[in-house]
Length: 135
Image 1 (tube, one colour):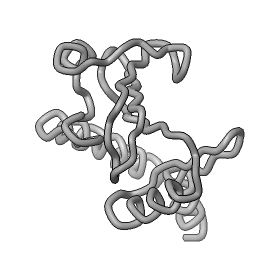
Image 2 (cartoon, rainbow, N blue to C red):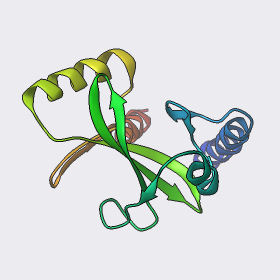
Image 3 (cartoon, helix red, strand yellow):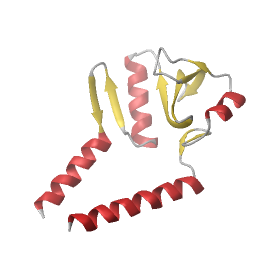
Image 4 (cartoon, rainbow, N blue to C red):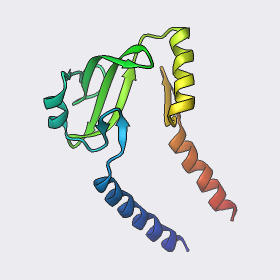
Protein backbone atom coordinates (compact mmCIF):
# COMPACT_ATOMS: atom_id res chain seq x y z
CA UNK A 1 0.00 0.00 0.00
CA UNK A 2 2.80 2.43 0.91
CA UNK A 3 4.53 1.73 -2.44
CA UNK A 4 1.36 2.64 -4.33
CA UNK A 5 1.04 5.90 -2.40
CA UNK A 6 4.71 6.70 -3.05
CA UNK A 7 4.22 6.02 -6.76
CA UNK A 8 1.16 8.28 -6.84
CA UNK A 9 3.09 11.05 -5.07
CA UNK A 10 5.98 10.74 -7.55
CA UNK A 11 3.57 10.89 -10.48
CA UNK A 12 1.86 13.93 -8.95
CA UNK A 13 5.25 15.63 -8.60
CA UNK A 14 6.02 15.05 -12.30
CA UNK A 15 2.58 16.31 -13.32
CA UNK A 16 2.93 19.39 -11.11
CA UNK A 17 6.42 20.12 -12.45
CA UNK A 18 5.14 19.76 -16.02
CA UNK A 19 2.18 22.03 -15.32
CA UNK A 20 4.45 24.66 -13.78
CA UNK A 21 6.77 24.56 -16.77
CA UNK A 22 3.86 25.29 -19.11
CA UNK A 23 2.04 27.71 -16.85
CA UNK A 24 4.37 29.45 -14.34
CA UNK A 25 2.91 30.45 -11.00
CA UNK A 26 2.74 34.19 -10.42
CA UNK A 27 4.49 34.88 -7.11
CA UNK A 28 3.93 38.62 -6.94
CA UNK A 29 2.89 41.07 -9.66
CA UNK A 30 4.93 40.17 -12.79
CA UNK A 31 7.40 37.96 -10.95
CA UNK A 32 6.83 34.31 -11.79
CA UNK A 33 8.14 31.11 -10.22
CA UNK A 34 11.14 29.87 -12.20
CA UNK A 35 11.88 33.27 -13.76
CA UNK A 36 15.61 33.52 -14.51
CA UNK A 37 17.80 35.73 -12.37
CA UNK A 38 19.22 37.33 -15.53
CA UNK A 39 15.75 38.31 -16.79
CA UNK A 40 14.97 39.91 -13.45
CA UNK A 41 18.26 41.83 -13.48
CA UNK A 42 17.68 43.07 -17.05
CA UNK A 43 14.18 44.39 -16.47
CA UNK A 44 14.41 46.01 -13.02
CA UNK A 45 16.72 48.08 -10.82
CA UNK A 46 17.51 45.18 -8.49
CA UNK A 47 20.70 44.98 -6.47
CA UNK A 48 22.52 42.25 -4.57
CA UNK A 49 21.35 41.91 -0.97
CA UNK A 50 22.99 38.63 -0.01
CA UNK A 51 23.84 40.00 3.44
CA UNK A 52 20.22 40.92 4.20
CA UNK A 53 18.34 37.81 3.01
CA UNK A 54 20.64 35.00 1.87
CA UNK A 55 23.50 34.34 -0.54
CA UNK A 56 22.48 35.16 -4.13
CA UNK A 57 19.37 37.15 -3.17
CA UNK A 58 18.38 40.34 -4.97
CA UNK A 59 16.38 43.32 -3.66
CA UNK A 60 14.28 46.12 -5.13
CA UNK A 61 13.49 49.34 -3.25
CA UNK A 62 10.37 51.49 -3.37
CA UNK A 63 7.74 48.91 -4.32
CA UNK A 64 4.14 49.74 -3.36
CA UNK A 65 2.05 47.10 -1.58
CA UNK A 66 -1.44 48.19 -0.49
CA UNK A 67 -0.34 51.84 -0.32
CA UNK A 68 2.72 50.94 1.77
CA UNK A 69 6.29 51.25 0.54
CA UNK A 70 8.13 47.95 0.88
CA UNK A 71 11.45 46.40 -0.03
CA UNK A 72 11.14 43.35 -2.28
CA UNK A 73 13.53 40.48 -1.74
CA UNK A 74 13.98 37.81 -4.42
CA UNK A 75 15.22 34.32 -3.49
CA UNK A 76 16.63 31.93 -6.08
CA UNK A 77 17.51 28.26 -6.48
CA UNK A 78 19.81 27.42 -9.41
CA UNK A 79 19.35 31.03 -10.60
CA UNK A 80 15.57 30.52 -10.89
CA UNK A 81 13.16 32.61 -8.81
CA UNK A 82 11.52 30.61 -6.01
CA UNK A 83 10.11 33.28 -3.71
CA UNK A 84 9.44 36.98 -3.30
CA UNK A 85 9.70 38.47 0.20
CA UNK A 86 8.25 41.84 1.21
CA UNK A 87 10.01 43.87 3.94
CA UNK A 88 8.76 46.95 5.77
CA UNK A 89 9.19 48.72 9.08
CA UNK A 90 6.62 47.49 11.60
CA UNK A 91 3.79 49.72 12.77
CA UNK A 92 0.42 48.63 14.13
CA UNK A 93 -1.35 50.39 11.22
CA UNK A 94 0.77 48.55 8.63
CA UNK A 95 0.22 45.29 10.47
CA UNK A 96 -3.57 45.67 10.34
CA UNK A 97 -3.49 46.65 6.63
CA UNK A 98 -1.26 43.68 5.87
CA UNK A 99 -3.44 41.18 7.71
CA UNK A 100 -6.52 42.49 5.94
CA UNK A 101 -4.76 42.26 2.55
CA UNK A 102 -3.52 38.75 3.22
CA UNK A 103 -6.92 37.61 4.40
CA UNK A 104 -8.72 38.93 1.34
CA UNK A 105 -6.20 38.56 -1.50
CA UNK A 106 -3.57 35.93 -0.67
CA UNK A 107 -3.05 32.53 0.84
CA UNK A 108 -0.66 32.69 3.78
CA UNK A 109 2.13 30.12 3.49
CA UNK A 110 4.52 31.20 6.24
CA UNK A 111 4.61 33.77 9.04
CA UNK A 112 7.96 34.67 10.65
CA UNK A 113 8.81 36.92 13.57
CA UNK A 114 12.30 36.72 15.02
CA UNK A 115 12.93 33.09 15.93
CA UNK A 116 9.24 32.15 15.78
CA UNK A 117 7.87 30.64 12.58
CA UNK A 118 4.56 29.13 11.46
CA UNK A 119 4.76 27.25 8.16
CA UNK A 120 1.27 26.37 6.95
CA UNK A 121 2.59 23.92 4.36
CA UNK A 122 4.37 21.89 7.06
CA UNK A 123 1.24 22.05 9.23
CA UNK A 124 -0.86 20.83 6.29
CA UNK A 125 1.56 17.90 5.70
CA UNK A 126 1.35 16.94 9.38
CA UNK A 127 -2.45 17.04 9.22
CA UNK A 128 -2.49 14.82 6.12
CA UNK A 129 -0.03 12.39 7.73
CA UNK A 130 -2.20 12.15 10.86
CA UNK A 131 -5.31 11.50 8.77
CA UNK A 132 -3.42 8.82 6.80
CA UNK A 133 -2.28 7.10 10.00
CA UNK A 134 -5.81 7.05 11.37
CA UNK A 135 -7.04 4.95 8.40
